Length: 336
Image 1 (tube, one colour):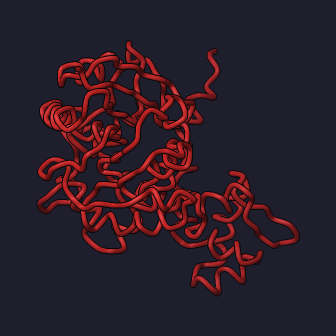
Image 2 (cartoon, helix red, strand yellow):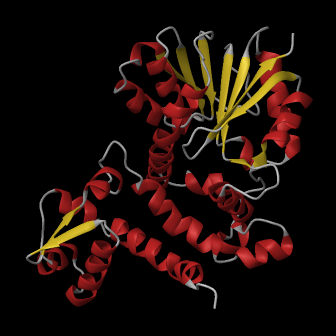
């Protein structure tokens, strides 16, 4: 008989993730960072049922997110780093987004496959897009941007490392969010100046992150919509987790706009999960492509698909490099 372990692990996978989601949502890791606590103490402070909480806490111990000694629960190092809201490397915002937004959308993956469309309206109703939902309140916007910042810090240092960007002088990160990519680039390349270009409600969050950077004097923000507003001048534009949101017509329009704005010798840096040519991997990129199916009108693409889009917009010298981080990098130059 074949080994059933892979199937059993997949059956339980959502239970494990939901355990972590719930512990983050309830603020358990934030509370434990201030000092260990017993289940009785935590239940009283957070107004939870003690017996049910014990099961959740023990589940977190089993997952390696907490330790338990003499009835006292404490965070493990990985929980302190990534599951506390106040950690500089926190992924708590993305976890909350995964719990409250992605989990319901993925519950309709079957209908997305049947109809070939995202599940945004059927799950959340109303008008507008998933991006409108992210920015509906200050709290929702903060949680989403915090999540994107945490994820970005895992990839951006590698994105700016795999290509030598020292030839460039001015970087504009389009849809740059909290500025993690521009910050990583300017911290690595001392001659580079960076601008985070994003919506007015977003760039204020970038200012706070920039202020903490050792390259703060070479970093700034500019408010705008990269689809409708003129692009700030630059010899290097970056688009990270942007192209995978859209269909080809919008991507072609944006890449054409970038190409027209670049000087000779300028380039565009794309950061995305790049699929293998046959679509057979990596698993993270495959899962992200399904995520785009339930969330947006976009998808993940192969190197050749990015090459075709970039060359179609007038770029040349297209090169893709794996980074070993969640996102890969594609660099392409303006055709002379």
